[in-house]
Image 1 (cartoon, protein in one colour):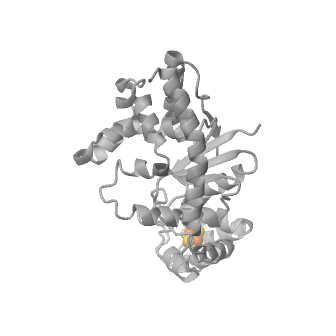
Image 2 (cartoon, rainbow, N blue to C red; image 1 turned 135 degrees about the vertical axis):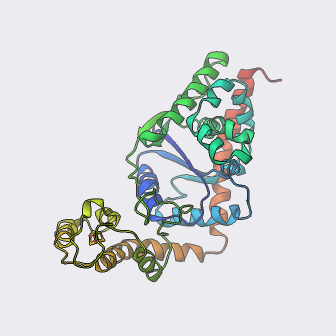
Image 3 (cartoon, rainbow, N blue to C red; image 1 turned 90 degrees about the horizontal axis):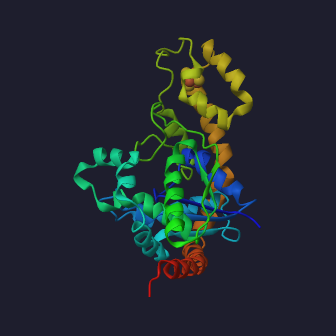
Length: 324
Ligand code: SF4
């Protein structure tokens, strides 16, 4: 029997090349060997969002990108977290077995408190419980994570073990599937690529927009003038060539070090590579976007299938907990 994968992502809207290289391409590959459930976790977004008017649009745009990238609703369950309300019910039930001390010690909670001292809501503290509910509601046993996310999964495993100890077995202990999520640095050359840092390249951007955007990128700070020799090993454009021009790495490095190529030319080569690589994705995305109601159908069908599993799990949980 195939293992069951679960992964959730916040509705950040149109995805960028960092999202694709970092996660989406792994999601697509996992479909070959696992039953996959991929969820846009809109409730999680409420813990930090103060302005929610973009949630609907962001969710749709994100799913368009997922579908165009190869997530297949025939193979995987693709849905929106809040469309299966049992997750909130399970969150409440699991919160009764989760010691508050565990949650207050979570490093990301402490970071969030510093980041948004004006909005330290209960949801921030309960975030790991909701995350656990996401996973175990669907009895997922395999969770694709990077090394940095292992502590979050460990908390989910602790909550499952405690539930099992108190009430008996309902959930499999979710196991990490360590996945290489390459950390893609943004165009500022400093921080992880992200929309909020405004240092990203959107997958769905036009070729012209992509070229313009890449032209704004920071490069080797030692290259002030065209004739200055460069240091590709410290240049973010060069690190992106690894993904988009892997067969030209030596040539570009040599030309950079010898100042035989300028940064503008080098960025143009990168933009050509990105546009070449993304052309089929963009074509598929435009085609899917034109199908009236298609994304809504995917969401509805995903929620229907997820709901079948969720209903059964909640029934078992309530029985084990002795709820009348
Ligand atoms: Fe970076 Fe290319 Fe400029 Fe060298 S030539 S510093 S690799 S952008």
